[in-house]
Image: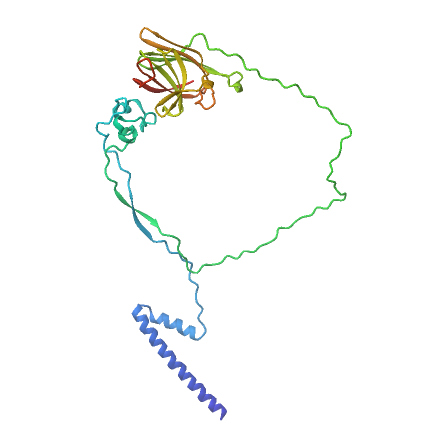
Length: 351
């Protein structure tokens, strides 16, 4: 009787199981038909799962590339031509800069224009100026948006191990006190010798020369320091210019006036002095920095001749370096006082 009851209970349970399974499969079939999945493969997976035989296969770690956002930025405008009518305060236009400067005008591009029209850098195409420009063109660029999450992150197992230490045993204990020498040894040193700077002079004749332009020549000699570390070397110079006013020569690291120093002679005043060049102004240096020697200024047969001797290395000034390319600037003007220049330029000499 008990076996019959157990059998009937088992049959009833099986019928409920089959009925529930059929209802579940119908619902799955309806959903898969809408999504387009294969019902046969899904049913096989479901049967295996209900029977306890299905083991899910882990999916590989995947990442999703960040979406790209379309943005626009302005392309650099091109120079459409020199500013019409622009000239600097000396009356020189953009053609002068093309003939006397390098592309980009590194030497004279910051020279101011007439009537507050800006410097050459802003008005001449040769000086990388804007001149007449076209409006900026918008072009697309792609910029990835921020960080993104990845699915199924995996953890890396890290095992920490301690580093083994080794102890070396010695049969005899060591002492931290060094051995003492009872009898001191004597060592002798020679007396230090001092380098006495020599008294240097310019040569009687300045055999080296550089023709700056027609009617302007620099005669020069470089007397190196002796000994080298003494810093007592100097530059001997004589500038001859066909002119009837002031003349000057400057020492620069950039080819520009600003931040440079110059030696300027004014015949009418009989002076040859060192000047600081700041922006477009020349200011005489203070008395303690007027270190020139052998100065002279004369006028002969339509020429102004200025002689001077300048130290190679002076604090706060552009150095004059032996066996290296040195950049010089020069200028000249009319009248008995220091005013606007009528000629100017720059040049390089390997001393």
